Length: 257
Image (cartoon, rainbow, N blue to C red; front, side):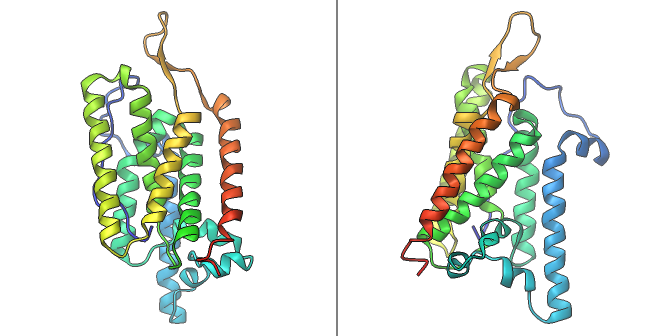
C-alpha cells in the first residue's frame, strides 16, 4: 500500500455516454466531483504533512495517522481510514494521484458518484485491514483504494462483456495484466502488497454484488443499469459490515501483538 500501481489503465469504452471532448475544469468537476474531490482532499493532507515537517520538524500527520498495528489494537481506530490519504514523499503522492485521475473518472461515470466513493473508501479500508492482518510493517497510501477501482473496472467489464465487444475484451486484458504486474512487483520489492491485494479483492466483490448491471431495453436508445444506486446501497452496507468484522478479527493477528 505504500506504493501505487506502476501502470495506468486508459478509460474503458463507454457506449452509454457521449464521446469525450476537451472540457473546462469546472465542467470536469461537475462530471466527476468525487474523483477530483478525493484528489483535492489528499493533496490538502499532503500539504499539511509538508507544513508539519517545516514547522514542527516531524510529520505529525504521518506519525498519528499511519497504519501501525499496535496503535490500532490499542484503540486508535481512525488509523484504519487515515492511511488512505497519507503519502510518503512527493513521488508516492504524485503517482497515486495520477493513477486516481486516470482510473477514477471512468469508474465514477459508469458506477455513479456515490457508488464510486463507497467503493474507493471500502477498498482502501480493506487494504489497511489486510495489511494489519498479514504485515507487521507500518504503511500508508491510496494504492489499496486505487487497486479497488482497478478491480471494479475489471469486474464490470467481465460482467457486462456482452455489451462492449472486442474493445471491452482488450481493456479487460489490460486491466488483468496491470494488476498481475503490479502485484508481482510488490512481492519483489518492499511494498505492502497485502494492502493492494485486499483493495483489489473487495473492488471485485463490491462490483459483483452491487455494481452496474447493464441491459439493453428496446424502447431506450442507451444501455440501462438494472442495479442503480437505489438498489445497490443496501448491499454495500452489508459488505461494509463484513469488512468491520474482518477488521475486528485482524486485531487478533500475530502481527498485531
